[in-house]
Length: 230
Image 1 (tube, helix red, strand yellow):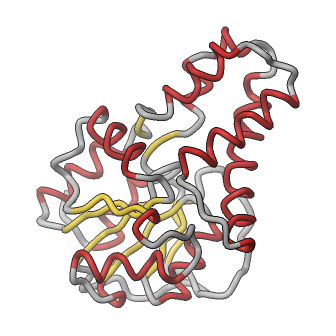
Image 2: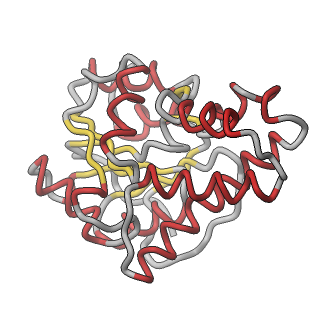
């Protein structure tokens, strides 16, 4: 069930990959170098990347997201029989400057004009996140760029979501958390955030514990959702 009241939100906290930044842009930028399997590789890379974070959580073997991303890419390159090391270097390098989704800059500017506090909470480690945010021109937009690296565990472990109050002083009931990952949104909702699922692909709900506050198609809907004037 959805429909939680989003009035009184003090901070919007965004997942990075897939929510603000398009992870598919890494492969799209080097489509010719990757070859005919580019689209399939991009899809599998993301799937394996997330799968590996869950498996590492289960095994208690945390590693920086940069390492996990590389391990997932190595699997995909092997699966598609791409042995060119230059392709790997290009794709990993692109992850440091992923393209923002088209509506993201305007939405962030709107929220900033409206005085909304904003932060990022991501599986990415700082060495990945900081260059990407800087490359997008949005470094001054966010009060904090929070990484799971500080907690030593990946989402959706509650210790990750606790970083928001610990670092920014905003209680969960005053946070609107946005993620394109349905499981992440449910994890945040279970923790106590007002969680909004950015369902860009029209996927079915995972129906996990934690009631979502809203489901939107892209971030252009956010200002109206939380009552920030355009």
